Amino acid sequence: VNIIGGFVVSQRMLDLFKKPTDKDYTAFMLAPGVIFLYICAFQRELLNPVLSISALLCVAAIGGLATMDTANAGCKFGMLGVFGAMVATLSTLPGHIVAVSAVLMAIGGGLGLV
Image (cartoon, rainbow, N blue to C red):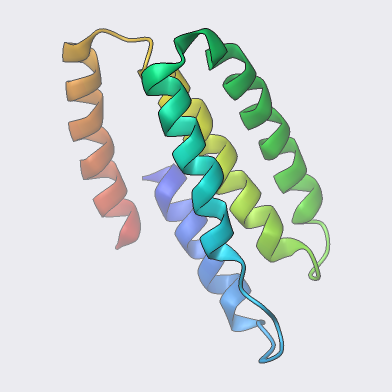
């Protein structure tokens, strides 16, 4: 609830202050997410670098949220960092635990969207 809801609320607040001239580069954030998924599924020896990059993205998110000019990018960096860390961590767990975690995250995420 907290992860998804927090990012959704943050993005909604940032959208309130968006200028008509601001460009949206959200689609470019999908590429690193797909790369994280690929690495976690097929290149297991690179899980530690994914975790390190995810941690750096979370730190960059905090710095990005410090000013209004970079807040939108900071929010996206945070989403990407948390996503990378979650995928890398879940890829190391047994299948039955991942299944239970996925159901619980889907329920919590659904509640966070409300």
